[in-house]
Length: 199
Image (cartoon, rainbow, N blue to C red; front, top):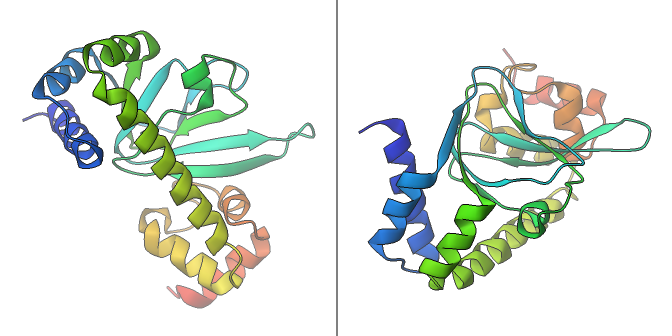
């Protein structure tokens, strides 16, 4: 079985864990999902344009970047393998406030807004399914933000336990981006990491 089929099967299984779905949905996804393999880090969707596809991370990571009027970037979220991404920009088809960036080595599947409309018509239970996924995504994000209130050592340790692929430093993501995600200073990240993960 190729990677595309494996990812579609896993996505279907994940959807059914929220709410059982007919097998016909899996076949529709297999016939209509796009896929993109990222050798290098690349923009999937740019700020100020509508996000045209809901995404499924088959391998690797997709980071959401926000930026201030001064041009400062902040990593707002990091979606890892098996994550589903369909934010307000996709749902409303309005310009996004964020950049979605696939990190090097990632494999991402997408389903277009038009195909999602067909899915909602052909498989009405997917409307409830979408609400469950959005609520679960929101719950996980609130929990992540709550955990950032702990001391820096615990925050940095937990980050690298969840994302061991981000070691060694400077590989998948630069320190400034990781620090912005953890809401700590870049020097704090480096000092704590050096203390916790001695070579």
